[in-house]
Length: 335
Image (cartoon, rainbow, N blue to C red; front, top):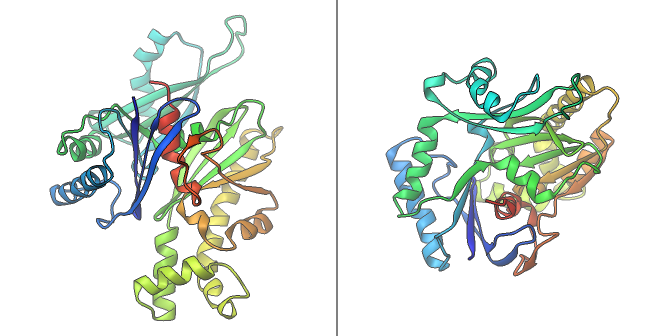
């Protein structure tokens, strides 16, 4: 039975309907401008408007909604990889609340928590530690997000964080080199480092696509539509418009580079014997002209564009594959 996966971003809503499996057969892809401008509603009016928008996408495109899978943006998630002595599943379940109190900055009475065992050592290896990924958000945020869909008569099958979905879509196994995954969205840059097929850390930095557009608008005295067009057409290209757009957005882009450099240094300190070897870019802002070359020069590292449809069949889109990484990862999850 086909599943429908939905990734609500502040700029666009991305949806894929496909047969869910490790190699999904894509039936339909949809990308629609998010006219509400928020990914997670904060009040009843935003909830109503966003619910109407998503409902129209499902209705207009005749998408099935018996198996609907959702992602939550990293901007409302607190993630932490913790190292603890080896525990059984039952022991971990008992201890996880206390661990969350130490590492997730949300009061326990307000906390919605999930956890995933990343590494459990062999029983014979008494020296090795267990590593667990904690992901927490506020219950009120989860409840409002689910209400968005229950208003439409839809009961979501499951919900997970964007970066875990993206990681699954890229199928980075233990044999792959240490990799930084960078999700460049409209309002946030999310960074995940993966080594030996295992998540090392995740963090977010505000200010990407929308900030670039507003900077162009204000500096070049354009309306918002023109600014968005200039960004998408000229980007970081020095030979376009005498490099004016490049000059305007370069300080913001270099702030992103600085955050990526911090992540590299942090990983180097955590694992001095293991060097990061590549960066994989995903998200809508990867379409900015010249951004891949600029990152490669600034970071002196191999830069790749994510290909979430690499293992897919069916009606895959002709371009802009990177915006669908979250949806593809949701499809590939075995429920």
